[in-house]
Image 1 (cartoon, helix red, strand yellow):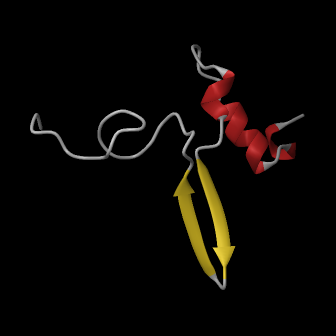
Image 2 (tube, rainbow, N blue to C red):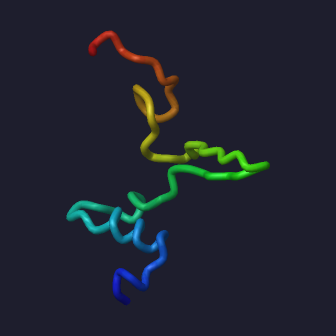
Length: 67
């Protein structure tokens, strides 16, 4: 299967698992996208390994004084 024959999800998976030390978990979904009444909402999944903000997963996102 050529790259042009792949779906967007397959291309994403291929890209995220092609690095030398990549594991299958690297391609796990990180966001949920929903649309309602013309409004698109993007939520970071609770089980996402990588989350925006400061700190570690599960901690409140607060800036540190070290910056």
